[in-house]
Length: 221
Image 1: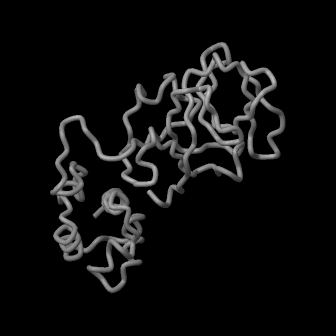
Image 2: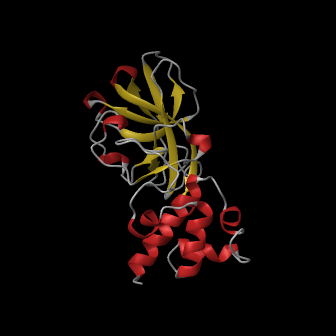
Image 3: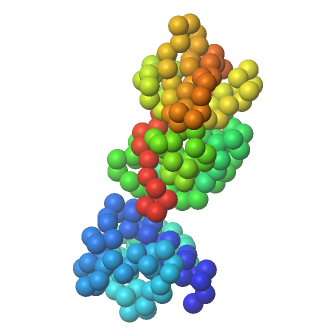
């Protein structure tokens, strides 16, 4: 088995486990006395033995075509309709590269979908790049964002993904939002004290607004 094959099998196992919202111990302990060893399989540094692979497939009703070829559904008892996916889409893109004004019409295809109950009402998962929001959100972490339809109802001091039109230079950024003395404007502020200075934009320039509901690290995917 090549390193690439090991990595892909490990990634698929991890996604299968996370789709059940299970820890490594919960998912593998019924099958092995050393469930933590499967972390090495998930990160691609260890081979998955054929016997254990078939035990995992049988016990969890895992689709073997998913494990070895990446063909959905993940589980044999899943009934996925054409065009329908389970969970929230993860887009591995930098915010600055997003051309659309709404994540729901992204040209990018999601890398995969994440079924994680606390964030299943969210619109998307996105990676964090840069340090402007450190320590709240560190570079490399994944944020879960939920679209806000009423832009007049804002939780001041909370983090939001803001997408603006050309009148505010087509911003795509995550910042803390604060109330401005002019009710037609919003203050954008970094949480990192090394990034000083506020950005003030017009409320009318905001095309889409998403509250950041939480975060996870890349190692949890």
